Length: 440
Image 1 (cartoon, rainbow, N blue to C red):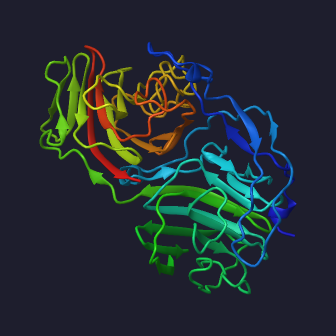
Image 2 (image 1 turned 90 degrees about the vertical axis):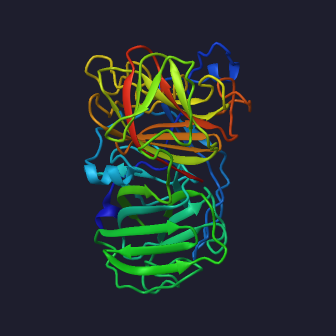
């Protein structure tokens, strides 16, 4: 019996973080005001769904009604180590090593965190999948399993895929006698590397347009071109049969385009009548000083991945990145806050929403950035879901459940809009660099 099967695990416990925040806009709306602004509150939600059937083993769909079990949320842990080089390249952590923040389950199974790994061994077949969707990326992770385990890593998938030949890509984890052994892309390409699954193995999968390639322990094992490529989708970890564990999950978005050239404000709309002063420094940074104002992209974006670097030159300065804005209006969009202050010395208690928080919607669950130091921010907006990472650490995970409205202060806006950098007040003095974006 392997170590994984010896684990004593509570069954059918899935952490589902309640992703709603309060609304205090002057415009006001009852839908938003019904939400809770406490990002540390959570509930455990189990939603039965039709399980995937990625190979020869199938499991009937569960017939139970959804069950909701309330449990306290684990505190936001300290960030896992990330090198400056990794952050500069755009790597973000998909798993914080201690909680299932940013993940949700499609079926009843005993997904949990054990010894710094996501583990599962029993329950209904199905996925634990990221709440965020991705399109082009490199995914890095480690896995190990029982010898006869049949599991998989799902790419560009929905929460309940039904056919790995059509509606997802499944990188299989399975014995050599399986029709698609470990390293294969189920129903698409079979490979046969020798793998002792009871040991930890490193996988790096690149999904770029129509190409899927994978390194297993540093060796190229898969190179596949899809004649009818899929678009964006979640990343899923599968329970099919047998115990499996995953750790060190991180992702680097690919195919991003620069939106600031480091020389001038080409591609940006200025508002000289406002008080803020935007300029390009001799170092090639985009700097904003002085009072209230905005700088707006000429391009408009709906679903996207945005990455940038920022530095606050003084302590507790306030700014923000606005997106899906109504072009030409005054900061009329969703706002990803920039404010590194905290209450006392507690990084899990932001003083004013916190860097990476969605202002007036959901506070950042932890202050990760520091003033007077460059930090890295990633914003992913897809349909009604918004997630933000600071220095590679996911700080927010929010679903906009309000009714649709052209004005994102009053309701859900999924239409394309501009991206704005905010000048907040006379103390404003921040710089930005390496702004790049990819549409999903």
